Image (tube, rainbow, N blue to C red; front, side):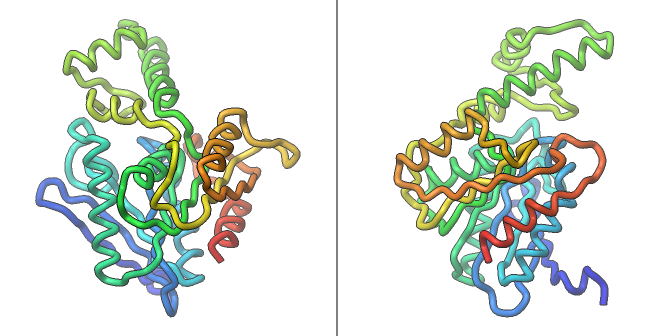
Length: 275
């Protein structure tokens, strides 16, 4: 039997024509224990992590979870253009996907996010009235503003290396504010999406969260601890009343690599957390 048959995959599009977004569900093997909805990272990080994410989705399906991967409108296999996308639209995609899943089978819901997707999952949990049983965060970003600054610096470096007229990050922001679109890391974006991402911060509280936050952080050495920014974010969540379970893993930063690599330790601790 092929992996495709064993995986019990359910691909589909949701939303209105022209703005439909793609989801791929790995159906639970046997009796379903819950839904896990994956919130992807931004840009090329999404593509670099697809194989790893599919591995994890298979592992979660094998222990009884319907695991649904979401491509936001304007990204991946979804309709629409990234330059026309907004954070509000992506929140709506998540809400619609969850509503569809819960209408089919009303089960406990875990949001699983990677990098920017982890910060988006936190933001969604903080601002939605949808009950969430747990948050699974892979290498979460803690500041949208810091992430946008990194993206803009990548554009500055790309222009220099390509022999093109240079720009500063301030000039790029001014162009965006004036209504222009710009290309960052191979993706064309506009002010609305960039401003939405930049406004993302660690939430002060997660009133709809009923269970733990699983925080998975990559470290170079097993003796290393959380980065300063991650440590502060975890402490903030705990102070708000959240149960935060931190797990450190070693391995290649797959979201940065142009070639496929494996992270068996991350897959193992993630499966065990929900097992």
